[in-house]
Image (cartoon, rainbow, N blue to C red; front, side, top):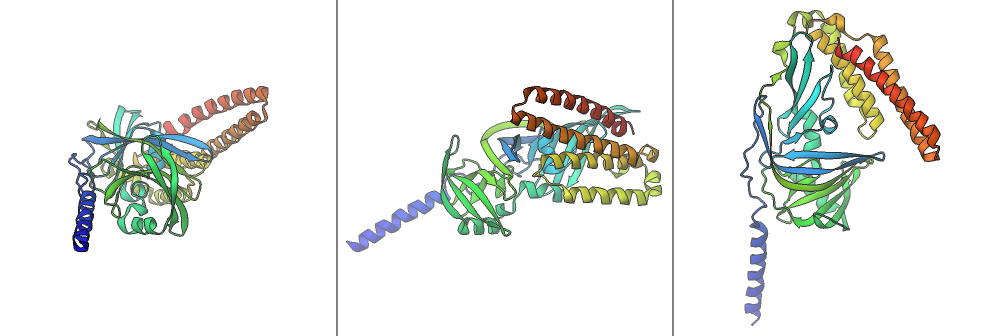
Length: 369
């Protein structure tokens, strides 16, 4: 009798383990066509992720299109593109679209008004090091993720309106404490990478033998990503007709004559990137302006017009005006919190005038050089 009971237990466990490994999604490759890392192509995405990024009390809506075959993401909003790939436009360019690959890099598509050639559709290409950290978090790699999941403390979290019952994992990554909220439900998503989405999204849980949803990711610096939905779509973005801005279109003579200046500009850009504090929206705006200034100087040299570089004096005017605008916004916020409606209304009028004047100066100094 005992032998029969043991056989029955083993049989049931075998069925359970088989059901884990064969749920139809975990370990199953996506059959969706992957995107090609080309300038002129059509980008395809089979999932759409929506959510909110919160830092310093500011909430920024997020929308990402995801390809389950290669983990690439499409972004149609320039604020989101800026956060994950740095400054996305300069010289008055209009942002159109960005696509980011976890293993290759990113491409940013924009439209610009050339003084001589008219409206131009251009594409910038960036390397992997800028886009990969935001797309493929360290914990998403199997070994680091497994260690976090095994050592983190676990407690029930509030039910998600879309993803149901959840667990909050609190643990250490690189010596810092992170909080990750994960749905208990299986994600009915077949995928090739270990993780798809932007920080939140879907990951392959090797311990549970199923794909699961990361619905919230809280960082020690106060930045929080929350996922509202991860839904099936068939989104296609046409990138045909764009011209890649690359070395072949540079004015070689101008660049050769201004090597020291280009080196200085490159060092300035690297310093701005290293010191950028993404948790501070005011600092992000100021860093973006400084990067636009250096980009204008670089473009002036590369196109053969080094004399069109914005001067230090004019750059100082722009930076000073931007700082005053940031201070004025804080003043308006304080007046609102104090309940001074009259003072707040006057402050907002002054702020609008300052922003209009700044935009006129920005176009004069950055778009026309």
